Image (cartoon, rainbow, N blue to C red; front, side):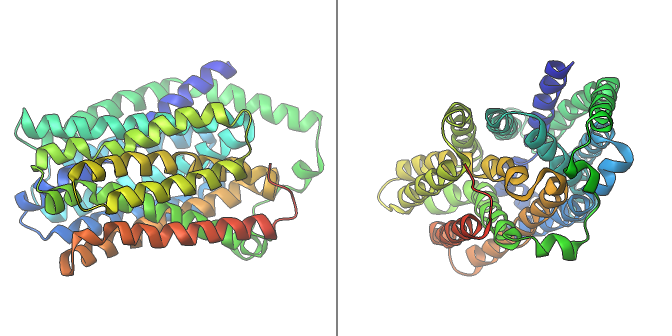
Length: 397
């Protein structure tokens, strides 16, 4: 049963990645079709991430009330319906409307699945599962490129991904008996062999969470990483179109190189995690991201920009899963769901604020400032990571 549940979680992570790169891939054409400024992509992202922030913050309560399986199944269904709504939208306000269930569906399942994996599986699975997220994120730009080139409509890109999500949602609903058996078995073990952590486990208030030593820099670490990642994802196509004069449909395909880098990096990182610790892998990722940003900054040829997106993705690969995986060890298993819920909220605050801010900068100044914008968050990320290392009593492997 455990192996089957793990396989189902892999499927869930693919479903989490599928919608994430659609908006950035479609936006060079979509904003023209809707006759709205290029910066309006940030408004859609803001609506989505307000929902994800709220659902992440309350993921601990959702988990205890409904269980991981039900929350996952309902959340994936919500995103599927929202994507279907995107596909039939022909006004900007309609995209805003459908962004609401999209956001609520994404946040809870993200926090719950990440905590479940951090608690119950080896570190290589955390990287490989996030690699599966990258598979989904890599596939969807090609789907959008196919819709733009072969079907001549961006709507069909969202429709195809919606159908895939609906099928995945059906699979997860069908698997609920397996989730329930696993959760009942885990509860039985806790009842027979209680530990101090289990005895003391309780819902923490936000004040208690923020008072945990090292919690604030860890939250800011998430904020900086996710600001960098989504800014890169959302504006990669537009960067190639406006800076290097790519055709929009071509840029949509090339923009997936960032997610290809993340996906390959997490596949490799799974093997590295068997031998190397989270701290080393995070530092290694930061250095590789710096190299990617350097390539993106070279002004002589578009090939450097394409290579820069791949290398940046490779560097991003270990950072997110390693931070999550170290959370139960650093802050305690009894606090991990509360911590990861707030971590996800800070991640989505980064998603909410920083990519739209760069949209304004790109519109008012220049899209060429993307590498400099990325570098600011990279430096802050490195500083926050070192503060987490210093402030936490428990040694991070």
